[in-house]
Image (cartoon, rainbow, N blue to C red; front, side):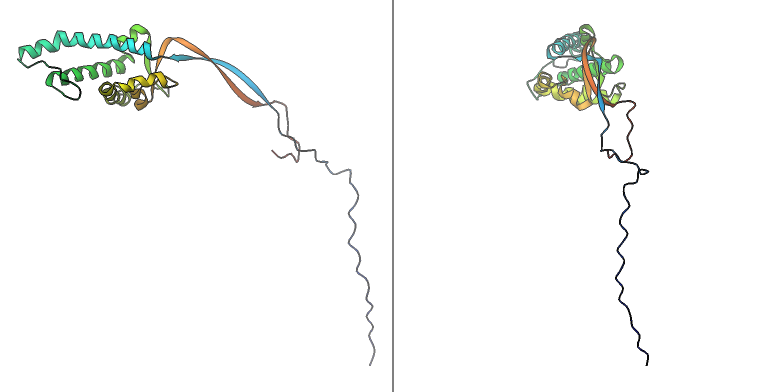
Length: 206
């Protein structure tokens, strides 16, 4: 038999990494883009406060009372229907008629002109929060449902004093504001914008 000898040869070491290759791109440290703050000014309508709206409401009440005195009361007297104005939460035919006249006046004037006569005199009007036109749906929520609750309880009118944008309860129902037509407030708007000409280098993580 022939003996076979196997030489144990040591394994070759893995090739060492080559030195720095100048042809490879050198990555720069991570750098976020630079921003600049741009300030712009704009003028927005001033929200009508409590006293302005209060006096406009008083003028409208005088108008509604005048219409009632000229047209409603004579009809009730001719029909021999008792004219009575019962206390809180009690209704009579005359009080129901006055309520319909009251709500109808505010709804009609707000839909047609965006303001009642009282608001016209004091230079304020009703607008939607999104800037769109007043629809019948908006008017019904504001001037019928919302105003009925406000008139019944009175306290919701006082919300105007505490709300930052001077909304009453019926404004919150309909997403509306009451603003001055000829009075504006300056507002400063700040915007962040990336500087022009700044390019991100390879390897930059944002």
